[in-house]
Length: 229
Image 1: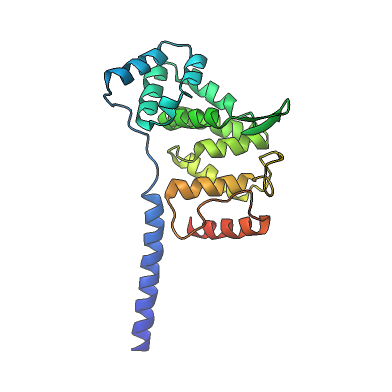
Image 2: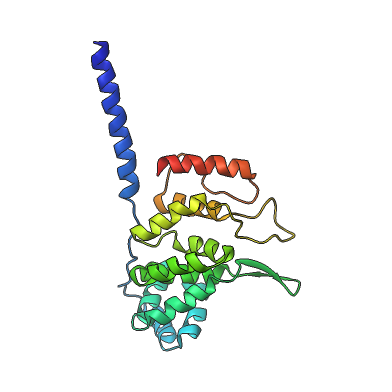
């Protein structure tokens, strides 16, 4: 009887492990839907963007009406850049080479909108973007690598998953320090942790690693995440 119970426990443990792995794999992100029909006003806004140069269009997409409406943003990116993907991806990749937050001429510059639009371009055109992202990660500095991780969290494809998981071992700081910062800057592995938790909606883990957490605490939670991937 004891032997039978032991076998049952082993089988149930294996099933639980397999289920947890399958649950992660099953939640791989997909390319966003882009074939929406909008109101006349929204269709007009998309058309306004689509006739601009690639750089002008990128900047126009940072407008609040696109930032708050993900469906509109995805559709606008697709219609604007479907026939000039390389230009759009090039602009998006260049946006990742600059710090997310920087003190410039005594003023704080936050490039969050630039990185967000870059992220969305990569999500809409993942197959065309992956080589550029991997190349910049290989050749870029810590700032660029950190931004690539930020911008790749929901980009579909096994190469991006592999990049994010591998980045959990990269301890290099990817942020500068500024007066309002509480704690130490984030490292590439911290940013990768945040993106992976969001990508797979992983439960029972710390939701986000922030500057306020000590390095030892960050490493502790990163190791927990590694055990779940």
